[in-house]
Structure formats: structure tokens, C-alpha cells
Amino acid sequence: MKFVGGQMAHYMRDRDFKRNYKILFKYLIFLGFVIGIYSILFHFIMEFEGQHHSWVTGFYWTLTVMSTLGFGDITFASDLGRIFSIVVLLSGIFMLMIVLPFAFIRHFYIPLLESRKNNKVLREVPAGTKDHILICSYDVIARDLTERLKQEDIPFYVIENRMENALKNHDDQVPVLFGELDNEETYILANIKDAKLVLVNRDDFLNTKIILTIREIAPEIPIVAIATNIESVDVQQLSGANHVLPVKKWLGEQLANRVNTQHAESHAIGQYEDLLIAELPVHNTPLASQRIRETGLRQKFGVSIVGIWERGRLQPIKGDEILTYDSVLVIIGNKEQLHKIDELFNDYSINPNPVLIIGAGKVGLSAAKALHKNGVLVNVVDKDPEVCKKVRPYCHQVFSGDASDYQILKRAGILEAPSVLLSTHDDTTNIYLASYCRRLNNDVRIVSRISEARNVDIMQKAGADFVLSYSTLGSEAVLSISKGQELTVLGEGFTLFIIPIPKSLEGLTLSQSKIGTKTGLSVIAIKENSEAKTLLSASTVLPHGAEIVMLGNIEMKHKFNKIYVNTN
Image 1 (spheres, rainbow, N blue to C red):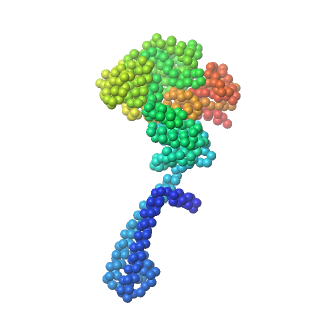
Image 2: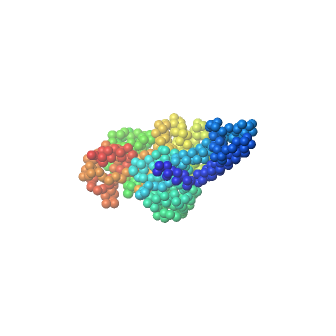
Image 3: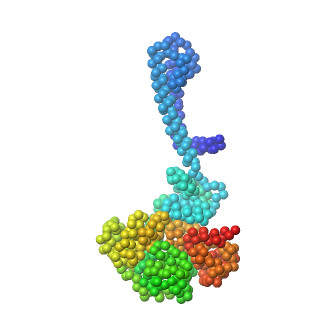
């Protein structure tokens, strides 16, 4: 009863109920009026026939006839009376048995069910909720981000302003709040003042409105906004956002950093303290055909090899892997160490032909600009003539047409290109083009964007050497900000983990711990008393009360927890 009372109380406050209530109430008044008229006419006709009945009897007769019960205890003798009975009976069938049930169901029962369903969605966070992350849309970035937040046990809520979306998210077990995004009350009910961070990820115009609304009630809360257009970054910052992420621009730059161009050299992709995390292509260098332990990079330069890319998959290092022409090493070292490696390998020439970019939208344009800035020749293929005009200043040649056309690809240089960068906004198209380009040129390095992280595996099977999704880059950026870390993007699913050293490892050396052998994680630093020790060796001891910094994926982290943390 308490639940029903609560539902009814909520329903009575609903604006739609008030409208439905008025319609139903008006019909009931009209029905009562008709019943009253019939009761009065009943008396006149009965008097005409010489019968005398009470007013209650008239009301009783009218209801029994209109409801088709027809007990037969009171009847008319005249034709007039019988015609009147037929009129009352037919109107009763229409008004009581057709219109009334329809009106009741349409204007009361269905809205009540809708209200009960809608009431499943929270309007405010549970009491005591704090250090949670608020997300303003459940888009592709949010989907990837929420999975990572679940893995790290960080509370979060998605705010939806459309009930159908809120109900779908609720049914999919996504913590969701229903409320208007430009209403201060929504954020008050979300306990924004105790939140850890707010992700504003609607369109650029609505983002600005949301940021201004939040700043009115929570001047200190960190706000991270996703910018679709680079021109809106300044506007959102001036509105009050602490961080504005032009993810599509970053995605283009990240992809451009993964192509093979000009000379063999390391490409920095992230940083931790004084350590740079970089990739080193093996193609056309003396490292090809060597085993990892035979390269001597640590002995010669002091850098550590922490992973190896093989045709789109990042593999942990065991030491006996044989490097191929397609291998790309993931190495860690300081700026001076990486510079020495670049000097050594600078003489080994890479294919000098232009890099081919297919799709020159926001991501492709950003990639073309980044490559042009580094002095790399670029050819572009795109269907849209207007897009071709925008990208032309940064290209060697531009080809307007369908990339599935062999003649266009051949003219654009697919048979000679060192790398192909696929940046169309459609995952299916990129998968098709990856497979097509791989068949046309088996030696080309294929770097591709995707929107949904779930398409990574099929893209790798299609022949891509490196894949990075819009969702992964965006979610990694937000997570890095929430943790106060630098953004490090190794690839899909690989990231930095900072974990307190478990008791089972305290006092052991890195060699004795066998972390890399057992889990695949690469230890890159030990953080103790807010200072990070990055020069590590096999004899480095894991001290009590410190933190260990490692690179890997979530599966490797789960292995680490199972082996070293959950050792009951």
C-alpha cells in the first residue's frame, strides 16, 4: 500500500495527469448529466402510462438499462416507453461499455503505468553519494568510459533529459538520472558539489549552456567538455570548463604519429614523470629478424622495451620474440636516450612516397595538418569536393572520388605508399578499405580510426596495423584528468596503472616478483613519498608503502590482482 500511495502521490504531481484528469472528469460529469436526464424522462413517461415510481427507482432503472443488466422488474407498456428504453440501452452500450473503458484506460490507467515505469528512473542520487562522476550523455565516449569506471569501482551517473533514453539506459543497468540539462535543480539533486568531475559531452552549443548552468551552483567542480569543432574550444573554456577536449583533432594527430614516414625514428606517444613512452618502427632497420634480447637497446641506450606491435596487436615482452619488418617496438626512456636511438637509425631510409589519407573530415584534416607540419608528403582521397578544398593546402595531391575505385587509389599512390591512414567516419567503410588496401599492397602500414571500440578486433583481422577509436581516446583523456595523470595512449585497451605494492611483493626485487612473466604488465616506475623512481633494473627492490606504475591492459591487471593481491 505504501508503494501504491507513493506512486499515486508522484502521479498526482505530474503535469500530464492534470491534463488527463480534466478530460476524464469532464466525461464523467457529462455521463452523470445524461443519466440524470434519462432518470427524469423515465418519470414523465411512467406518469404518462399511469405508473408511479420514486426518484431512486428512476435512477436504478436507468443504470440497469444502460449497463445492459435488464432485470425486467420495471418495464414500459407503451411504444413510446419502449422506444425510450431502446435509446437508453444503445446510448448505455456506447457510453458505458465503449467510451468509458477507453477513456479510463487512455486517460488514467495507461498514464499510471507510464508513471510507474518512469518512476523507476532516479531523479536524484542516493543520500551520501560523493566522489562520483556525472556524465551528460551516454554517447560512444561515455559507453567506453563507464566500462572503465565500473572496472575501477568509481561511482558515476548519466544524466538524460529524454525519458525514453533514460529508461533504455536503466534497463541496460546504466546508473541514470532524469532531468533537464540546463536546469540547476538537476545538478543539485545530483549532489554536484560532492562530485569528483562532470563530463559535458553534448553538442558544442548545448555544452556551453550546461557549463554556465553548472558554474552558477558549483564554481569549484572540475568540468571536462568534449568539443566537436576546434573553434568552440575557447568558448567553452571561457564559459567555465576546466578542460576542453578536441578529441577528433587529437585522434587525427595520434593516427598521424603512427604512420611510417621518411626516416626510422621514435615517436613519443605519452609521458610519465621524466620518462617518454615511444614507438620505434623496425621496418628497414638492423633490428629486423633479431630477437628482443639480441637488440641490446637497454645496454646501449638505457631504454626498456615494454611491448611490441604486430599487425595491430600489442604483445607483452618475453625476450625471445623475433622482430619482423612489420614490428613496432614500444620503448620507454628519457628524452636524451630516445634522441640517441634516433641518431643511430636516422640513416636507414623509409619509403619516401607520400602517405595516403582516405577520408578528410575533421580527423583526416587534423592528420594531414600534423603530417604536413612534420614535412611529410600526403595524398588525400575523399568523395566530397568541399572537403577536398579544405585539405588541399596541406597535401601533395588531392583526389576527389570513391576510395573503393581501384583507378583512383592507384593514382593516389596505394601501390607505393609507405602508409595508409583510414579516417572516414564509418567503421564499416574503414573495415572494407583496410581489407582492400592490404590486398593491393601487402607491405603498406595501415593505420585506421574507428568510432566504436567493439570493432577493433574485426579491423585488425581486416589487416590494420594500428587501430584507435574515438571512444577510447576520449575515455582515456577523461580518466587521465580524473586521476591527475598525463594522457598516454598506447592503443586500444592499453593504459597506465598505478597500484599500491601488495604485501606479497614487498621486499622482493623486480626479478623475483616475475610480474612481467606472470601477467604481461611492464613495470616502468616505482612511486614512493611522491617521488617516482624511473631508473629500474632487475635488482630494484619493491619497498613497503610505495606504488608501482605499470603498462598493460585490464586483463593483465586482473591477473596481477588475482596472483599478488587476492592471495588469501
